[in-house]
Length: 419
Ligand code: LLP
Image (tube, rainbow, N blue to C red; front, top):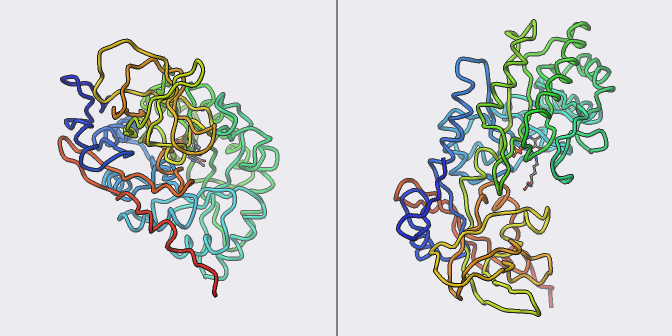
């Protein structure tokens, strides 16, 4: 579904005009559609119906408590990468027993906290982490359920910064070393080997990398089985892409079906629970960043629309040269101009969109689309800019799910020097 649509010359989210949200909460402001998130989730869930599956939501895409809460009510599992994300899930009413803990650099304190909370599984990324987890588990008197994140050496065909499945990435344990590391894991007293996982990258727009990774993982599963190491689950990570521009990613259901077609062909298929860790494909298209045009300006041949949201609010364009659609909230008639949409931050990299043909005037509202994933989650306070509020819309009702930060709060933890 598309939660954002033009009605009566006004861009709406669900049944609410974005002008109303801007009037009530100011700009810049993140806005999300409750229905779009729920429907994305249910498309995955329905495609998995009747199977042994845990679909996890990768919190890093958008970790607002209301969104976690919404997905916890849908029986989601959660993929976390820090103690901070663990506490968010608990604070939002999620259950530790449905959490997988990913990440290449979990600290001792984080391992301890997650063990005591009783997370479902640790996705371990190195031999060194395995040894540390075994030690910490011994100290707290728990057995740690582990999965090894294997690196299947598959090219996800996506931006190099978000591609993680190649041998040269820092992620996972190489395919060649996986067997040895599993043998070690099985021999350690405080660990219980329960699964295998991989995650090959993000914003993947075709099925082939997923099925190639699954084949590599299944090959390992068989070799482990031969050696007497049997697993309970296979976690294929996340990474399904969304449409920002003209991409045509497979549907959520198509991905799930392709995975099960392969899994079902496996002789011991019934033995394995399938896990997924989707982030972007659940929340990405459900959100937009509303911003207001402060100034129009021309430098040489280039026309700039300077808006009140900057790279600190939405970092993806500056960091990955990511493309986000920009829609006027109240489109106006008139001769269009080619604009670069730039923010107020003192960096040339502070742009949100380039070469967009629009008819704009000072004070106009724009919506930067597909900003629900890795938008607010990656925002910062650079230039001492308070982060925007977040609003979740349900039909014609708006819920403020995060207040705009105050300027004072930005330096409240800082101290002047003594006299
Ligand atoms: N599991 C693991 C282990 C991950 O590292 C990630 C994302 C996910 C799951 C979720 O992937 P998704 O379904 O959202 O693609 N900031 C970048 C994306 C970084 C992704 C990092 N890992 C961006 O804005 O495009």
